[in-house]
Structure formats: structure tokens, C-alpha cells
Amino acid sequence: MNNVVLLSDPIVMMAVRLEGFLAWSLFDR
Image (cartoon, rainbow, N blue to C red; front, side, top):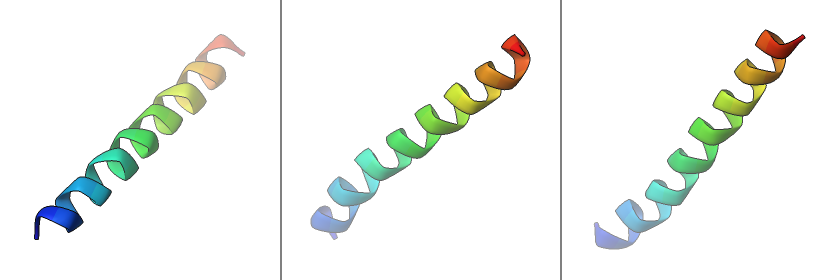
């Protein structure tokens, strides 16, 4: 279970950062 959480944590963080970057890019347009 710990392994899954550790792997999921960075993936979720990356997804959130990507979404935020895309949203910011759209707003900047």
C-alpha cells in the first residue's frame, strides 16, 4: 500500500501542476 501511495503522490502533484500551468496559459492568452 505504501508503494502505491508514494507512486501516486508525485503523479497527482504533476497532474495538478500541469493543469494549473495549462489553466494559467489559457488565462494569459
